[in-house]
Image (tube, rainbow, N blue to C red):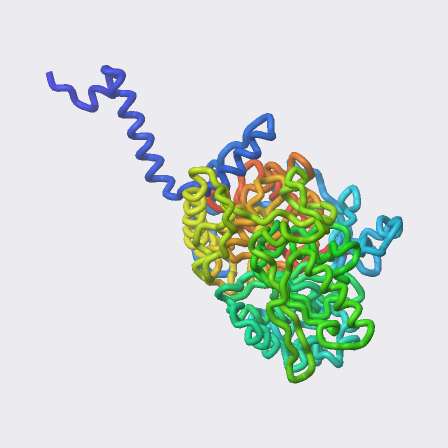
Length: 611
């Protein structure tokens, strides 16, 4: 007798065939009803493994969430999105009511918790080495919200913002008066205007940039030289104009009497951060910057046994350049010559050589030093001073680490050969990074990670989440991995601050090798940036591990502090983490949308509490 499929299901004979048939039906149903895929990269899986190894219960992978019966129209593009959930604040019963208050004090509008801790600053025993400009984080973390300046409005978009910003957004006139003769910044009606001048830029910053390359043509802006550190950057016009040459500059200065200079830079849409060369290492890896620049940056390089200059030596790539434009280079008075002689002694002791020294038609001079590519010079010194660092004492991540009084060993391969210079930009972005780990599968993982982020950004972030990308300039990736997210955005008119948290595997050298910029940070503390300085924050599987050390509420407060009103938050994480974060964002009056059960899109409002 013939056996039909219907007979098998009805009588449940041949149990193996019956079970196999059910399995095929289930798989087919899932494929038809769930046309999205899970967007995990290699680095994401590494992060999840890191979380599971430090937690008693491993995190669950993202699961689908019940979606609304009708698709939701994106607010900025008008596009219709499938598998989208609008998260309603009425569902936040699991979270206690949060009563937000405004931060207090005369400087509350620009409050930076770890740099404005006056109690800790007043208790310092010394300020000789800029200790009062370093980080002193309050405990517990403050949960107040930073107020908006009166008259605050949506920032001027890039590229117009490079040359002018709203005065009411950064209402600080002191620098206008203090630097009026040097063409840093001028006030013009409702605007602050940046003419592109500077203390050393008598003919404008563009001519100064060309003057450096003419002095040493091997520099080749945007080809050989891609990643720069500008020390004591002022309003960051040097870095802002180098963007035209495909050079990305990390501009930094302390929060000091040059009122709001870094805030001006970030409002302009130029990469910048608050930092100081004091008693602690800068938050960057060894051997990563192609070139470091200082134009009258007011750092005493020979102070404290030459430690400030040794810190630059640590982070400068072997064969990299230090451009110093300051009066000791070209003036002959007693004070300047004393500084120059001290500089000669320190640079000689760390084996830097002068490769160019010149003066322009305006009498402004500069000197260019080059760091050695091998350790042979160190071995030939008559005196072992400063000494070579002991490899056993090396800390992988420079986070609250005192400055060294020694010279780090230069990187070399297993045969003792010196490390090569990265390939030219833009090939550098997608080539194998020099600092990639030597494990057998590391290179494949890197390329798979790059491919993953390229697809995710193209298919989901740019086209599927209803984010208004035309309003975005300053971006921060809070858990950057290999920098794949930033690399995928390289053709967009944005720049990305790649953050490598201190509790995850250290990949920051890889990011710099790719021609991108970034920093170390602990997200249980506030960051070294002003309020309202980023247009978009991106977090990929960061919060699971982080919330084992600090409260997600404190992380949300910091996000709210540094994100501009109207700015965006993109979170890819487990549904458990999203369920914890969403009600906190709702209490801050943010709107949120969930996409495909694992992408939370938040948008910050202009709301502030009344008291």
